[in-house]
Length: 295
Picture 1: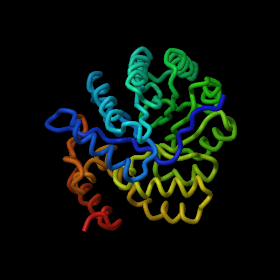
Picture 2: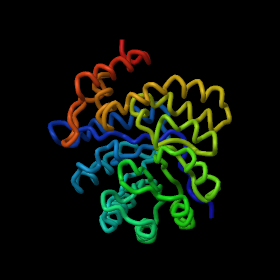
Picture 3: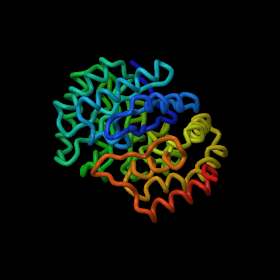
Picture 4: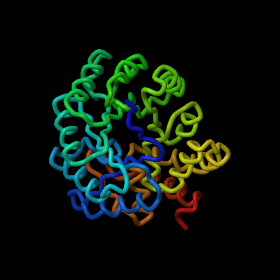
């Protein structure tokens, strides 16, 4: 059986807040923006969506609002990862019932499971809920690196279809593509590495920068998928400084601030994330001006 494919430019969408509450109207606006600009899939409730600060009720509210706004015009992949396997199952069951096209599941964070524990965790969710699952490796956030052999074992599960790789190691990503082959789609979790990863067989990105420049991100990944490496490289080199600027401070602080500077969002974050330092905000504004987004 051929596994479902997720590829191209997929945005890790920010969660808009207004006066401390989830702003559903703004979710609708952001979804429209991505539909019009060629984004292939929208991921609510990921790291960029400040998922650790959402209550379970809010998490489900954001997923439902995104699916409703998308109305089948663009894929919705709900973030359902947790460091509690039971909670991950609950969130994944909800995503399926709400009509999500798939789920993105980050490695359990803070409790640092062994590789055996990671396999058991993902197998438990995959067996409990029949929905396409994207694994998500980001050791800088979770404290655990999902090894290639672990992913290869999980790739045998029929509904584990893809891997979002944010280890920062192109060597590890390349080994993953060699070992897993057609059993698993590998996409970048780091905008600066999207094109290098696609050059060795990756299929796209789950992107932060697509919150700001979705059209360019979609065009770059589409060019690479079509073998137009000259065009893909041109876009990669142009957007690279802006991708770096999104990490002047902890994500999603800079991307939300950029959206505020561009008049697309109020920039509201939830504690413990705080507004950017003035010096970093100024640097960010300069990066947006250099790109041509701010006059």
